[in-house]
Amino acid sequence: MSTSHAPRALSLAAALLTGTVALYIALVALGNITDFGTNQAFVQHVLAMDTTFKDDDLMWRAITDKGLENTAYIAIIVWETVAALVLIAGTVLWFRRDNGLARRLSTYGLLMLVLLFGAGFIAIGGEWFSMWQSKTWNGLDAATRVLVLTGIALIVVQLSPSRRDQDA
Image (cartoon, rainbow, N blue to C red; front, side, top):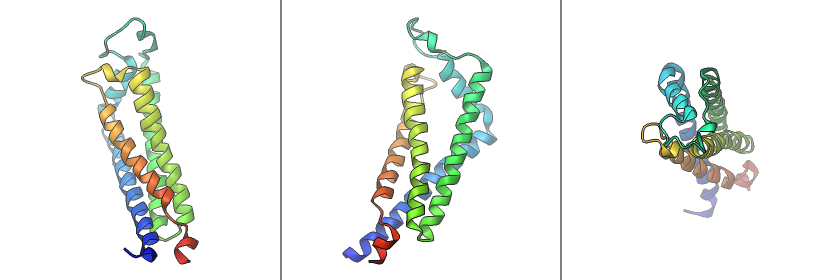
C-alpha cells in the first residue's frame, strides 16, 4: 500500500472497529433491556457470591440486598446504553471524515467499555466478588474478549490521523 493511502485505510479501520464495538454493545444493552431477568440473575449471583467457595474471609464482601443488586444492574445497562450511543456517534463521524471529533467520541466510548469490562467485570466482579471461583456465574472469559476487542479498537483509533494529516 502506498504511503498516501495509509491514513485513509487507518481511518477506515478506526471507523469499522468503532462501529463493530458500537454494534456489539448496543446489542448487549438491548438484550439486557428486553430480556432483563437473564443477566439480572447473573449480577445477583455474582454480587451475592453464592456460587463461590464461600470462604469466610471473603464472604463479608457479598451484597445480598436485592435493591442494591438491581441498582447495580440498572447502572450497568445505562452505562452500556450511553457507551453504545457515543460509539454510534463516533462511527458516523468517522464516515463523515470528521476525524478529530470522531477520535474524541470513539475514545470516550471505548474508555467507558474499558472501565465496564476491565474495572467492573474483571477487577470488581472477578476479584472483589470472586467470580473466578464460580463454575456457573463466571463471565471473565466474555469480559476479557470484549476488553481485548475494545483495546484493539482504542489503539487503532489513537493511531488514526487527523483530518489535516490526511489532506497533507
